[in-house]
Amino acid sequence: MDFLSSSTHLHITAWAITLILFFVAALAGKKLTAVHMTLRVMYILVIITGLALFLEWRDKIAESGMNYDMKVLFGILVIAFMEMVLVRKNKGKSVNMFWVLFGIVLLITLYLGMSMGIGINF
Ligand code: HEM
Image 1 (cartoon, rainbow, N blue to C red):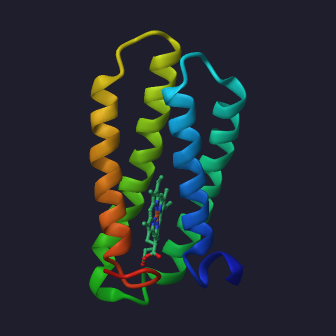
Image 2 (cartoon, protein in one colour; image 1 turned 180 degrees about the horizontal axis):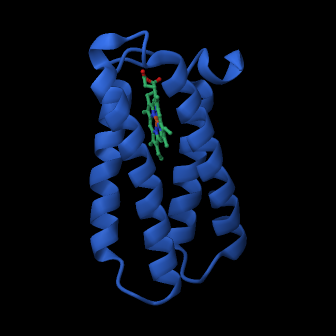
């Protein structure tokens, strides 16, 4: 499974497409069922590529071990809040709170991802 974890490109591609689909579905005036379904498939790809990186690299970069666990947690929270925004929007419930939570956990996830050992490093 080297192709999954030897670089972060697949993971980046997966979450970039995920974010685009999320904004398309969330900002559209009506319910976009097909986009939402595709988005759910993308969630799975993000999780698979993220977990592959996690299993491959966690032990090799000991000093950022704890950050690796946090990265996984926040990555999953980003997905959870995207889903909350879309499901609540489709039901006509208020979504402001979940937009804020989504924004905060997304920033933390991007920071954690980029400040760790592999791939693009700041
Ligand atoms: C939409 C959600 C997510 C976003 C925006 C995101 C973003 C990122 C970013 C920016 C990086 C750094 C890439 C690089 O340095 O080249 C990264 C790496 C990583 N991500 Fe995610 N991610 C998300 C979801 C997940 C999930 C769900 C998991 C785990 C199941 C995960 C696990 C990882 C791991 C282990 C790395 C490697 C960290 C490193 O050493 O650079 N991510 N992610």
